[in-house]
Image (cartoon, rainbow, N blue to C red; front, side, top):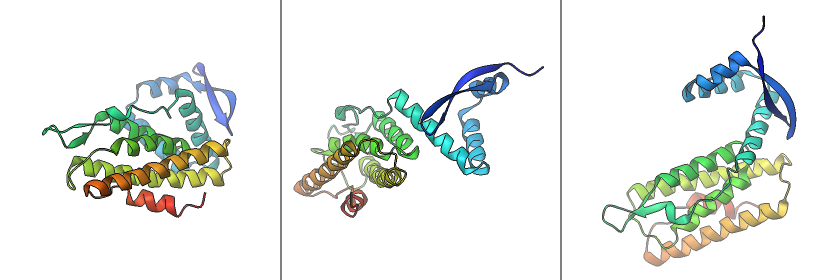
Length: 207
């Protein structure tokens, strides 16, 4: 006798269709470790057809929209005074925000991720930090994330998945302004500008 099935929503080209997950499989999913699920997902996507990968990312985007993953964090919570009471250090909230941005641009929602990363760049204005240290290391990671998000934006455009071009241009303009403001701010206190790669990516992006 086949195992019972439980309802699930599957997504194909942003259209919801009713499907089913075998109860035994659903039990496994509910109890497997996160590392096991990651390994299985990677294997499935690597060995499956291109349409499987497309369906996966479509489902991921639908889930992220449903959970409101683009929500912005308070700029006051991303960095905190260091042990000396002055030099800022990244907080756990920053790591959460970066994970959220990576989920977005990894699923093909580049413009949404750029909006999240914009809030991080803006939060650095007015802060000062040492050239070597946790803060400098964290901002180097943010710089790389912005570059990846821009690449995701380009792919989103090429895939004709941008429904609101005006909003897309607005978020790019916000990021450009934030990077320029950061440049002026860091020059003002003689620091080392942390977003060189992001600045170049934006400058040479004809959008």
